[in-house]
Amino acid sequence: AWASRAPLLPALVFMIVVTQLPFLGTLVISFFSWNSLNPDARAFNGFGNYGTVLSDSALRSSVITTVVLTTTVVLVSLVLGLLLALLLDRRFPGRGAVRTMLITPFLLVPVAAALLWKHVLFNPEYGLFNGLLNSIGGFLGFEDPIQPDWISDMPLFAIEAALIWQWTPFMMLILLAGLQSRPLDAIEAARIDGAGDRQIFRYITLPHLRRYLELGALLGSIHIVQHFDAVFTITGGALGTANLPFTIYQTFYRAHEYGLASAAGVLVVIGTIILATFALRVVSSLFSEEGGHS
Image 1 (tube, helix red, strand yellow):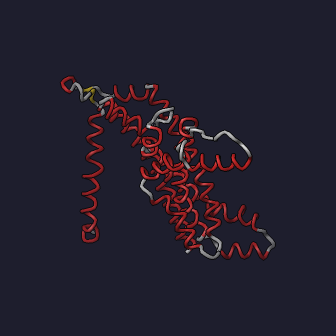
Image 2 (spheres, rainbow, N blue to C red):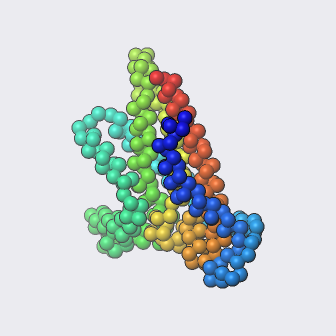
Image 3 (spheres, one colour):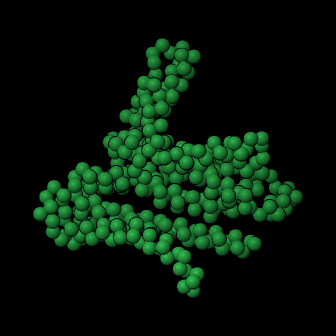
């Protein structure tokens, strides 16, 4: 047993040092009243920081923003990912090139993607969106320029659009893998019995994709709940767009409240662990089903 587990020992030690020890330090700090601007006043506070975090109005607002942001991005990217996966499941010339281009947004660095949307697309003076609107307005005979300030007028939508664009390829890959593992004999039998494409999708494809949809939703939720880059880059947390990670950043780096920020971080980690537990169960059930089919 040790001979088979020994090669994994360095990876286990590395994981403990990199992830568990910092979390243990964060957990210890969360029990202290600790402001870095007044280090001499540091004192043990018990669960007082957690009570302050849970009763803080700014945190409650950031929780609502996080829920709205995560739900919108996950649902819309799942629907778009499903449509793209259905497209790529068909054979057509250039399918490999189209698949590569569709995957590209997910491979971008999150900060680079946010900067792309902020300056290239949303900028009210030289952004692509306003350029297209002015071109359409000129074609329709409008004399005044059309220059909406997307970020100021629709701040949360601006962040959601950037995240949907970046996370749709991830959902597409998961659902495409599910589509390509469908039982072809059942589909062929349904066609012989006279079922159309809509009936096959509703009664065979969609039930088969249920686990993959759940997996995409859970994995997407885990990452988007912790997302910081787009909020920081596009709006700077202003205009009601501050989510939990950004609020923790403000508490730690701007207010210098180490104890409160650590307590909020621990609560976020606990919520993420709960989501990850459900995701692991879905993955386990997927492997079990694939093993049963084989």
